[in-house]
Length: 317
Image: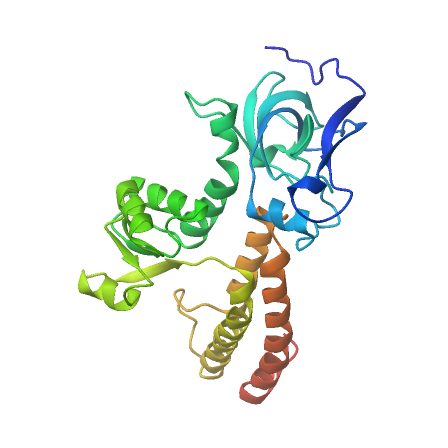
């Protein structure tokens, strides 16, 4: 394996261009310059690319990429490392990796942050590896890093037959959690059970709350729920009340001279978790960004009034 930071590369590459929005037929092959890896990035010769919901939405014109992301479609790739950006030490030329890209995956070459790349799992080829990053990174960040799921706990996973759902069932089961899930048909429920769910509830045929209670799932601390366009408005309302409650609790306890127990979320905790989420998934900020932006606006207005009224010492914090 070479220890150099680059290979002899062509000046141009083929990529999938999107001259207009619409169905799959609007995508065309085009030729352009190979992207150059920046500090902390690697350049990958793409052998396989995943197809995700954001790719489809971007092609349809419903998901504009962030300003600092590639305008080329494609968030998941697998292939060979052919160039290292400055300060990259975890990979070498010739390594085979799968990665979560900030766009640009539908191309012969793609740059990705080295921190968003992983070696191929043992026994995997590029096609299998390219299907991993989006769902596994998302599930790991949400269930384990943020929610702190541990062995022996119980988790409810909505949409168990989706890409996120099937991954969440398998990871939670592998780490010793009991999994309950919902799906929209008997066939989908059966698939969830095959993946390791203790109970799969057809939400079109029964109340999932009653269904979970019926089998003893009373100690649910974690519920994994998808954020989709039709759920943004309810989430804004829910998030506003949650964050406002956190500010109110913080203000009351401070007013009474009582320390804030670690299990009670504070406004600072909520904002920190939001920043962590966007740091992990910089390319997936559209729907959460709308939710967080409106929540912050509403909560700031309400929170300032609550703080000034309940505890003048907190004013201006």
